[in-house]
Length: 337
Image (cartoon, rainbow, N blue to C red):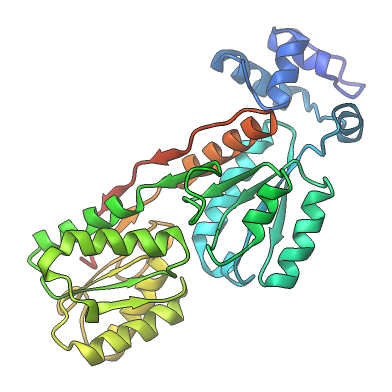
């Protein structure tokens, strides 16, 4: 590796010299990392850090016609960014994935039709090169508008109503729910309720499908609640389940946040967890491990989801048509079940 004059601002050619690679290789790493070996990419990233190189974004934007930034778009109420740790995990992962590429991430929150309209105008004006749509609702028109406008877009989860026509990174929601339901059945539980998410989201719909399929003849539609992914909603849903079925012995909550609310309701009703009622969540977002008692849950690979989304979106921006990616989940057994 070479060295540079520390008295001037490092350039891309300085990075190439320190990394021992060509100017073109450094350029490809900075602009998305395509057609670069893992060894060369690591050398370039190390050289960027050691030289302190930063890209001239204004010059690069003029040359390429791109903003060199991506949007992290959350179509949920603003408070969920702070109350639901899954969004923070995805945001951190996406930021990490862009750090070595000298690109920026713009956080956009669209809660309601007016905000969605303003964000659509902002995105279509070219202020970002593409959109990481972190939450999609079948009832929203924003995704369809972005696709119709030709805005490169990648979704977290399968966008309902659009199948595989929009690039997406997901987990197998139904099979993950079956896995957790099988576990609860294997522990001897039979009166198992489910508190799932909104039916117009992939998690809300497909986790219920997996639960129902695995329960088979034991499935009781009276033990189903469908709510927003919020603790207060989980608490209210659990209260309703207890009113309808005092003999319920386990609950599968479709998110850790919902599970925390369910446990609060069980405690208020004088029920012990897991002594009287076992509780299982979904996500393993950090909340599960720190809760008292720690939650049994389904672990999603958050960092991998973020990195795959960024890689996929850069592919789309560069004119490629990537296939959807489905990542594995795993069962994490803790004290609540």
